[in-house]
Length: 236
Length: 255
Image (cartoon, each protein chain N blue to C red):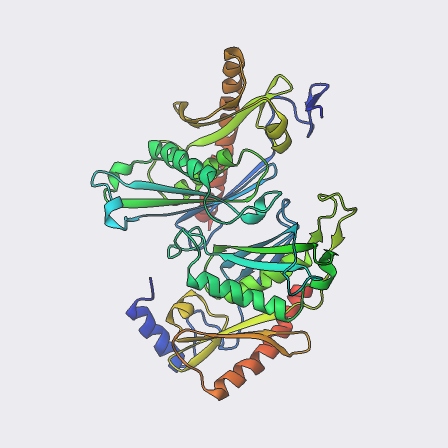
């Protein structure tokens, strides 16, 4: 299968083009903050609870809040049904997601507290960890959690020898490399970085530049979604 | 977590006056919204809201061996996930008794009404049959998960196609179904019996009664839950009310 033909990808995108993204801030009633995000074929719901007292006590940190992120895939979100509950992949993603978010959250304001960040993948088509972090960041802002910045994530990669932005399912499966990146957009510091596949150092430089460009575009959409919710409140 | 005693007193006092905290009549249901086909990866799906409660059901199918006692029938399995996204009181980890009871009551309504025509899901008798996985993800918990999960499961099944193409067995075809069950749940607190409990009412409830009614108005499954009790008269009343209320819900489900 040819992944790139006449400079176009299998879904007709140019190499440096994102899939369509739709972000809604605060769709859930119970959560302290929430976000629904559609990104190509991905559908993600994120919810934040807290800060609240960390229980059991031994998980408390007397100097700062603990960030407890849980990335979970719905059984029906993938082609072959996934057994419910955490597996090694989702536990790794949960860990690096919590670490990336912790970087920007002013955790020292809430000693002995926990902030729960729940990310549910409802429909999956590659790039769910980036979509999850992007949605979780909006949910944290919606919950009013003080942060230095609103994190954003996007992947770049390589398919048929060409460096491309935002891989979809078939490109991820049959492509040469995948590079998910999360940043704090104001300083463009890297909060999460993973890579698998095969890239030259030059290709990596090009892919990272593309991922940063993607992050900048998505960062705007995150802020628009938050403004949309809170501007409506102002007008009412 | 449970309900605070102040709130419980408030609900009790309202109940004595024939009122509910959200102003509904005792036999009044909250607005229902159903969106179908919302998940690309699923064979069928539906997102159902009852008031602020929202659940998402997805159907996946696989080919497997039949159970030895039903060699010419497909199989089904129902699982409700009470994920911590939906409520501060839900914890991660393996399903607890609450989630298992909920899954089994939803399963029973579908199974006993013979909603899925399992005999049409046989590929090779004794060897290969379709297995239908009904997975229900609770997204927002504001009371009455029994009815919300049951409704979402039925709507998702009605939206489902057998994925023949993916298994190189020809074209996809609709799921073989008969008439869906409709579930109606009542809770009792301080002598009042109300339909479609909100979160506060769920937490104040002393006893719960779920009734799955078929299209004719016959009963296909029931569950009494919690440590309180109902009189025989109350049980009969609930069944009568369920037969009436389920007609309106059925219109929304089939509409």
